[in-house]
Length: 365
Image (cartoon, rainbow, N blue to C red):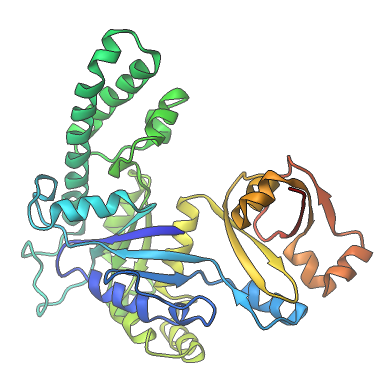
């Protein structure tokens, strides 16, 4: 399951946001309820209205959205990379997530004192990023020492890895996140993918604002957006306080409240969409009388790879897939009607699955 870690300095709204996440409407879905795996982990369904439209068409009682796991990671303090506070636990938890959501305080409130005594979102971001970079730098230096003998003996893989690590040292010493797509290529990329570095993970800055700034943001948010542009990150404007209120409402009431605020979707929904965008993920659907279900794949995945998400036997024994686009299915009203119009295709092993494809796999093991 996809995992996103929520991090932040003290008093930025991290805990409020996580509590809202675990109590949200999405978290209370009948077929994929929020569950506490451990005190700081919650599973939340990915909003997808297409599933419920299909539910009516295929006349099933069961809808199973795909889901994302949010991890409320132990609070960070300066010096975490050296074990300060809960530093070691913090860093170990981040290594296990697919994406990092940094909650950044972008609101003024004299009753909530900032840990550094002033509101400065860029300073907050750089404090977190520096700790992650320093932690990775320590790991890189250990790894360089470990493979030194193999490099000396001209081992090809060790030489490639050493070249990557030396490049990383220069970036990490400056406290920079490693953008693997800009700084590395070919065999170097493959070497990096095998390493669980913190600074290679995609980042979303969750700019936490007051209710009045939710629609248009503020000067703090603008600074975060400018920073994100040069650091290959996404920005989502949220109000943790409003998310906490929304979590107490039913779906209809929540939509009405959002309309009053002048926004179309909750911050939680926007965060989930941003994670999917950053990780280059797509959704395909299986739909029948038994259930309508969403499945998560990566952009560029072939039909057999997509089938393997359901079960490894589907990928191993893949023959072909019946495919119809979501729009064609809905416009026709049923699979049979789509077949009659020639809109259902038989695709083979090289077919690249598209977002919203409705698929049925034929396989033989």
